[in-house]
Image (cartoon, rainbow, N blue to C red; front, side, top):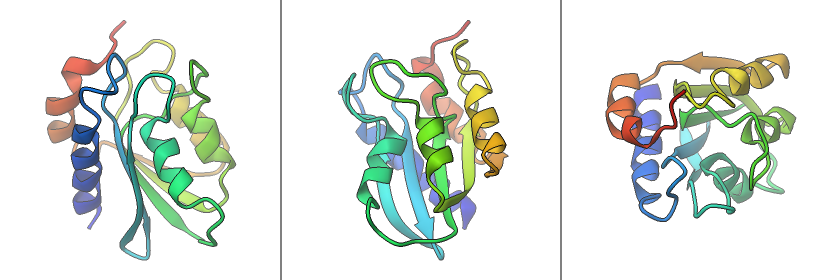
Length: 143
């Protein structure tokens, strides 16, 4: 099932283009009991990233033990928008996060995962990485 949810996140990421540019087109789904309860993608610069887009859809709803699937490592830094990694870390409903690929942006590059792990989240990296990287690689900021 995990691959199905990551492919759903990848489908969301494709909806981000071209509006999200120059930001990478990231997709995210949130799952409760093997059912997608929220999905999102990166919006225009200055607007929500994929994770915030999905989190907004479950705002005020009572869930426990949610899983999040995101195509790219959540951002660890604040730019035009707040850090997605910090927002996820602060949400007690999100217990487990599947990240397909690391963000090679030098401002991130593993820092987002560290924030999540330090908050006690279970973090998995590499799910469907070949397929996600084939799509996202051309949009990523490299060192």
